[in-house]
Length: 167
Image (tube, rainbow, N blue to C red; front, side, top):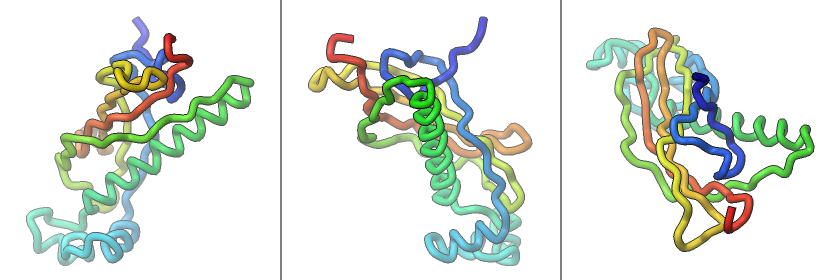
């Protein structure tokens, strides 16, 4: 049985358990230091020496850096999907905002040189009681390193457009 693939289209097209790979990123020392210098200037993010002198044992990426890359890749993947739909002549959906996320976890440190692959999986679907033109989607987003180890996860909620209020 083929595993369902998550689509970034309409609420009715989504299935619980559907998954989507959204891309991968290699965290270089230069990228880690540049991000940390601007947004998270802790010693273990700013230099190899600072990292060696910490419980991480080496230069590691800020969790916020990991989250920012995940968001970038999810947005780019969604934009690619919309371009593909438009190229096929399909009407493209306009997604609503996200009311938030929960259960953010930085499970293992992301070290300089690590490549993290990000994925999303639909975990729940429900129609909005107050806005019938919207569905509410919950998605588990994860990051896995090149060793197959889960390093990052969070549960996101988003408003997905329905094809019609009674669809």
